[in-house]
Image (cartoon, rainbow, N blue to C red; front, side, top):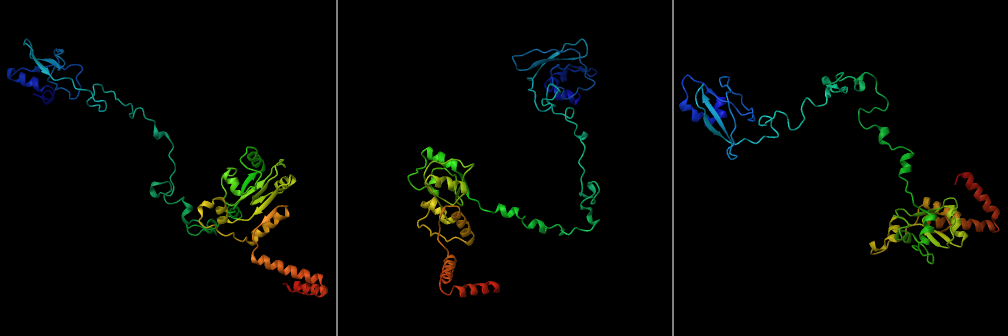
Amino acid sequence: MCSALRSLFPVALRAVAPTRAAHGRVRCALPGHFPPTAPLHPCVGAVAWYRTPTLGSGFAVNVCEGKGEEPTVVKVGPRPKPNPISRRFAFSQKSFFPIWSSNLRDTFRRKKKKKLGKGMGGAGGLNLRHYRGSFPRSRTWEGGTHPLFMRVPKWPAAAKQQKKHLEPLNLAKLRYFIERGRLDTRFPITQRHLYESRCVSKIARGVSIFNVNDFPFPYKIDIEVAGADQSSIDMIKAVGGTVTIVYMERVTLRAHVKPWKYEVLPKTARPTMRMVHYLERMKARGATVRYIKPLWLIEEEQRLQTQLRELKGDNAAGMIERLARKKDAGF
């Protein structure tokens, strides 16, 4: 008996084997719905065969030996469930997931990218990659390390990016906040009031007021900021207001805006020479400037006052001659 028949119908073979003739051949037929897992041996032929349902437990198989003999009814187990993934145990050879080599895109039709500098696996081997010493190096070549022209920051673009700017505040926006009642014009408006009313979202270096196209400002206010343009100063002073430029460095400004973060408020710092020049320019525009004078500025003012008194005195001619000699000497 062949192994295929033994694997398909183990129960039927045990029932038929004792009555089988020595010279006869077992003829059986498989149901049409049975999974084609293992083909039958060529000696087994299909004669007749039908399915008889038996209370859902399976089906009956008629197995006969030769012609003229009565078939033996053998019960076979229930029909196995199909496997949706494996094609081996499925009723249909058609795949459940239609992803096969027959419906994939032809990836080989795309033009391959040329590989350079990958050794023998690439086009040109090790050549065609910086030309590998075929020509002399440029003046900026430093052996593959970070070159000098890339280590040094650009100028003046890098210097402009590092410049600290003040927070801009449009005079029209300040007027809108006053009209909405979020700022009180009866009291001086400081940078802390501008921050708490959300007129400015943040204050990192200070607030600077600017005006566009001489927008009218009808409210008399006393405002303290870090900077202002000429149009803003003129519009505020035209209605009787004042603009005060107050110098505050980073720590002092933070203590002014958020004093609850400090147990002891820091002292006000003295401005640098560059900031003194900036404050004097604001003073020349017509604004009031408030800052602590540095010691070198106090000494310079005293020296100029002394020279001015000497020029107004009796020895004015000798003073003028002495200043001229110092100028010629380069002092």
